[in-house]
Image 1 (cartoon, rainbow, N blue to C red):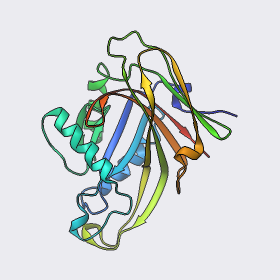
Image 2 (tube, rainbow, N blue to C red):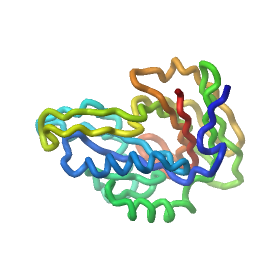
Image 3 (cartoon, rainbow, N blue to C red):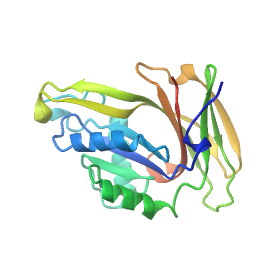
Image 4 (tube, one colour):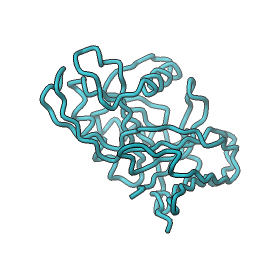
Length: 229
């Protein structure tokens, strides 16, 4: 039985990536807001914990150097080189403070003309995940297709550093990224064994079509989401 993502019932208008750290005292409000955004089926919200604050006394238990590199690549692409936490990048284009809901909503509206041109459907069928990207007539219709395996809720009790003693739940935490193909504007489908993205706590997945390359990421052209349980 297929379990469809939001694209089956409504348009996905934004991918919201939150770069956060357990060692950042300014991050908990953004972590909470990301959880609220994750409830909106028109938004693919994801948490990407970074590792560059680990030296402050608490090693982030969810951090991945790959996400720190992704945030820096975004900053280079924008040209402002602004890397901080909490920071949200909307549709791969605009960066705002991660706890500023109004700024996130403005960024979603601002980027609609530059991104989200490719409807994406993610569905779980048996032991496989199917990702379907619709055709587009846009001259910008070219990108890489990535699958992001996530844990929908990860509670963490922080023992040292700026958030010492706090218990925080992180939402839609990215645990694995896997490139599954390239999209050239024509309708395409990929089938991925769930075993390829299996890891502890993973219970959701998002598919993202993004222009550019990992070291020079461009606008996100489409996205879909599916629960795995």
